[in-house]
Amino acid sequence: HPYGCGLASHLGLAIGKPTIGVAKNRLIGESKTVAGQTLLVQNGRVIGSVVTTKEGVKPVYVSIGNLVSLKTAIEIIKHCAYNSRIPKPVLQAHKIAAEEKRRVQKKHKTL
Image (cartoon, rainbow, N blue to C red):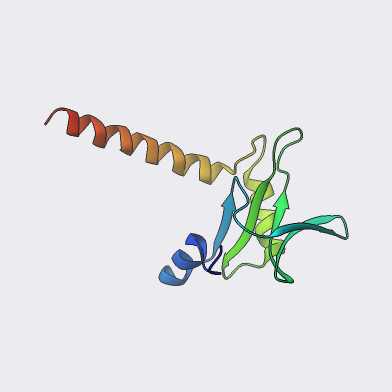
């Protein structure tokens, strides 16, 4: 995140729980391969990792949010993204948000 505290960090701090940042697109930073791992680096500081969750698809961008190391965040994302580019919890959140959006739009159309 350009300001160093994205949604995952903010939410994790607010609720005092571990969180992980996952994005479909790179927001900031440059890719740099170190010891076989592609890291995102901004101003000489590692800010995340480029993670391939499924062969033949674009990678996702993983960053620490709160109370989780980058290594652990990558392991969790790979585990949760079985047979998919996007981790299952993120897909589920998108599904719920889309359903709620449709519900609200339908409600406003009937007014």
